Length: 242
Image (cartoon, rainbow, N blue to C red; front, side, top):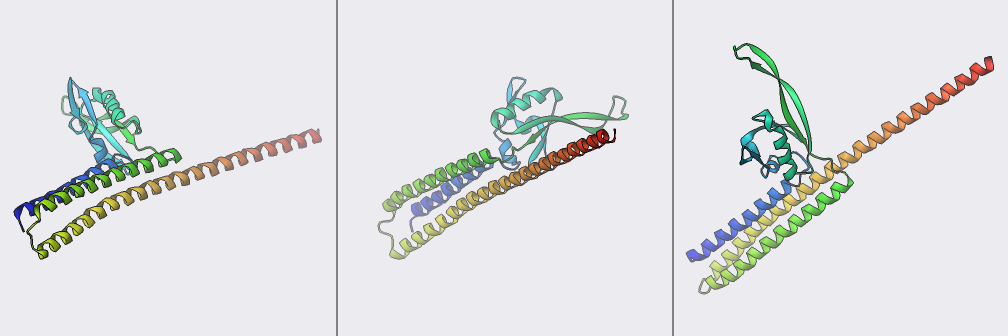
């Protein structure tokens, strides 16, 4: 088999891999859980220089749904908040503080307050559930179209390169292409289905929490109603006694 055919096959595999990687990146920026990748697009202007978030902060994951973003300099905290807002307006932000051990100018230990931005992923309520599912579907269709287009171009290229190749080599090439596409199509569909499942689970979590809140409110209202009824009855008894 000619070197050019093998080179074209390798390029096809690389392109399919790249499109799947781009698809994965886009899905992680449709945030349900706190994904480190979602912070990569965030840039902030500090001292006249545009900087990536990781260069001017220390980032820690508080839990599955939130980040703690510590500025290198406390004075930058508002600028950081604006940078996060530009890249991800859906993120919830809250400035909090925590105690930390430090030392004064004489080396004596002391406790200081360190401010940080708590960034929390928004709930997947009914509206966001629809938006996320639509967004995932759009990303999936675009990825599929890109991969189909790459294969269509490869069809043309292989048609130009394969005349004169043996039947056995042509069969091997066809089998290799089918295997390659099955691998990357499978990876793309796996990413798609996992993201949909993640959205579904987060939406069900929100529904369960809402139902629990509604139940608590109903119980509180019922309790207040019982208290009012009891007070009225006691008032009536007092009047009858008088």
